[in-house]
Image (cartoon, rainbow, N blue to C red; front, side, top):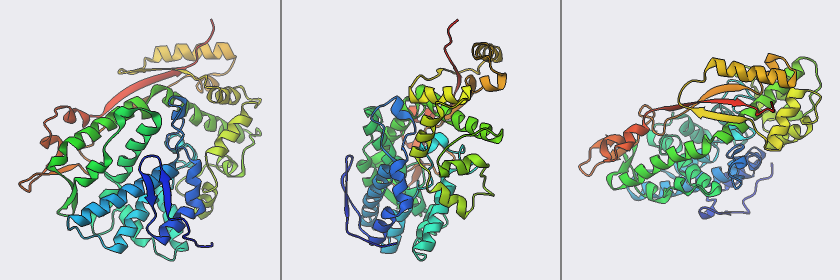
Length: 409
């Protein structure tokens, strides 16, 4: 592949100009694996709720790299040693941290490649790129996996206050217009420090951390777990599930070469080899949307109706509640669909289904956010903050949903 370092600056609507400080970083950005992220929606089908949410994983990766540059600068200023090689490795790790996302990001995770999350696929891409880049990504891979000796470097990439979260909250808030989710990422980064090889926030940054956690909670329930977004993404999952079922029964289900590969046979952790990775690298939102537009005219009632619902935004009704859905109600709605469409119960389950969603805004068991007090002591943010709501954020909140069509009597 021809290497180039002609372009060194990108213009970003959030941060302004993003500088690319290293030729290798630019060549990674120019690689087809990374350019694919331009065609992967950052927020799945959330644009059906928030029309501006059409930004991509490419935007997010670039923004995360920019914030990492700021974090490196701050930590070095505070006399924490980050060598030039470690700096490039950090930028590489955060740049590639989401390269394993498939079409519509989280919406179709585990639907295309079963039993493998996007972090594992990101690692597979990074290892493939490491071969192509003559082993120069080895340190970045170690940081990404958390095996590098300096633990806090991994925390900058993956923790409860990493550059990934700082960017996606700020970026998703901007593109959705939900300004309650906006955070002061620059302020938070300026408060970072290192203590005993662990990333900490200086005490004067406590209120910025409180705002960050509250914004995260708000964005999850108002945006990421919005009920309309949930039903739209569930329909996307059902569409691919039905396409696979029809294919297994011998029906013709036309799709792109890349999508057909994953429809043709189940791909799991065992069968996800180098060839499957290469095919996955050719798969993006366009394959899915093209298939849905074609399948809306399929002879199968289930597949065609599901596709029309997504394309025309005539979605199923969804109800969220704190208690489990009663089985009697579920069966009643299932029977109505069987009668209305003259279909089997198995087919009706594509239109009537229930589930559970859950969110923990702050996980006490997952690399807690530590506050460095003026006396040099370290405390968890929930023990330092005078905001009683933060302890409540550490509890998992679950809600149950029921999806079903509104039918004429």
